[in-house]
Length: 347
Ligand code: CP
Image (cartoon, rainbow, N blue to C red):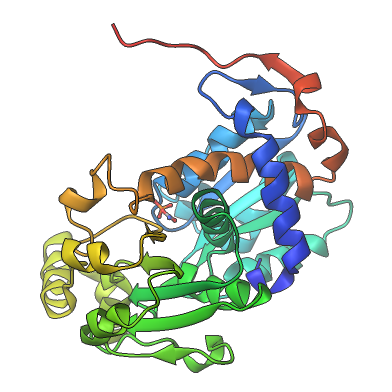
């Protein structure tokens, strides 16, 4: 539910087992580790990556999934309460992955199903409004391990929307669990980190100070430049509580207005000026902040956003098995391989 629930050992354990699964996360690969386990995706907010990697991880690990929840075709359209929808999903699925616009809503659903008679299902938080996105933080740590070698002695420069950015909030609980990390926030347009998430020794500067602070970093440092999109839809709801009731055209006008106000971009020159051992990460989706030139650059060693997305699959496979109590099986995944990765070639 929260990065706050993990110790550094828990995180390292998830990352180590995820790494063991790397050879089995290729396209076409199939293991039988989660055979008999069923996933239900319940996304009450849009998603591209998170829903895909959970369904794909379940497939690769040999489990099953029920159709993703869709508000328009579910009985919520007939007035069924949300909580009944969650209880219903827990009758036929073992793992419920939930994204919801209300902060802490997923915690409440977890409490609800934990208190049900004869319930064995559990819930994974895939983003609860502007509160947290802990599974994104896990895959970010995996990326940092793969790309920079460790999770200690790092400088994290966190840029963009720190007010509503839920992976950022999870990182404020996660990064300080490792040794000697420095976290510096650079909010755009005053979207600073709320007090409740501020760890000890956190520093914050306006975005326009980023180049100056970056130029003062010891070139021998390892740096994570963690960028985030501006969450226009959440700012729009704050400015106008009726936002969700407007037609699409009006909503777009409001979003465009906010977009113009908060638009920012990471200049290539800034990335070039940062220490050699810098990785640019972004939870995605991206907005104006990451240009195509940076996102699609295949040979810039500081850019790791597509790798970050790809690592998400093996991390999700890893925590599915661990959270399901199947750690033993992860010691020798080869024993559970039912289909080798396909060696597809472009013709
Ligand atoms: N990173 C992430 O949560 O992406 P989606 O919103 O596409 O799931």
